[in-house]
Length: 341
Image 1 (tube, rainbow, N blue to C red):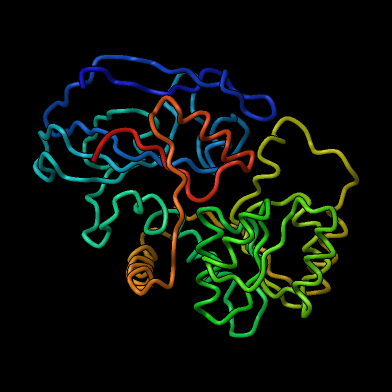
Image 2: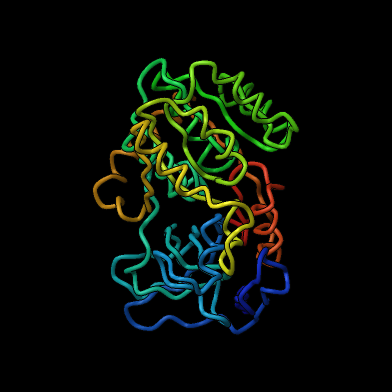
């Protein structure tokens, strides 16, 4: 390949992102200098957090600048190496973004762990989403056998893993997903005890029926109407790991309509002694990723944890794949196949 393709942030979205917010750019493939490697992207991860990086509102990470390459994790192959620690042909993982090639000095990449025999899993089950599920549930949710765990976005990259870990730990797992097909998959394939379609007109009643003993742990990926239905079901001492709020990612410019629920929520947190804890998984990488990878590779080898990938072919289709992810049209972990392995 002699052409370097990049997806740039063309303008900041107002409300829901549109295809017009992105731009495909072409340049010659760059040449690495001394101490650098040229990477060819094979798989690119699409994740909900990227919506926040498109905004310049204050956040835990800097925004993508207008005209810059969209951020994202990728599995790449070293095409040319002028770095002593990497050889041509090595597979590496790094946050190299939405582009066909990247130049690295080695500080922002790591060699693919030998235990990751399915390379794209380094972006999902054995990477950031899997680690997010593992840390959030086990370190904040702290499930005990017989407790009821409710998982929002139950068939997504994080939620699907949360539910399966919950079952391994003996919890009664209830998923929340969009549509009958996703709910069947959560129960029949992932082993959830039940799954409720949040699009159903009687969603709140169905959730109440599926959580007869109340909810001890709610793994929050969504917010919005799902959290509204969960709230009255939470037991005394419930734990709420807050991983994401996809229902609110487009609310940067204005507050959503409706009454102010903060006083009611704060009173419930006090009276029912709930633990509500947000977390950003990069804060826990240094001390936690090693134990996670050991546990997760073992569970995967024993077929205790499964993953469904939603593959998007071609870098040029990444923007549409991202919009499908945000709107709930994707099914499983969304990965862009940029080039052949």
